[in-house]
Amino acid sequence: MMRHIVVLRWSDEATASQKRAAEAGFAALPESIPQIRALRCGPDLGLGPGNHDFAAELDFDTVEDWRAYQESPAHKDFVTRTLKPILAGRAAIQFDAG
Image (cartoon, rainbow, N blue to C red; front, side, top):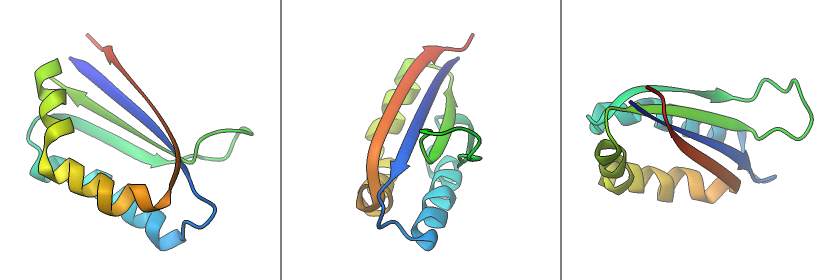
């Protein structure tokens, strides 16, 4: 199993509605991208200074499944329409989760 974790920082101009749409958009991805084995996401709890604003954790059976997710029209549309307009920063990692 392969795990993909992405952490996001919202722009100062991002509205509460846009942030909710981003969370809903992540949660909806498995409906249109069958390669996603599991997905968990949510806003930072605000427990430490300097944290990013949001994180998503996605599991895939194979690296090829992750690549299919990356290239899927649903993912690309979500990133372009929902995330990019409010994104100030992004970090990601993929690792073997056994």
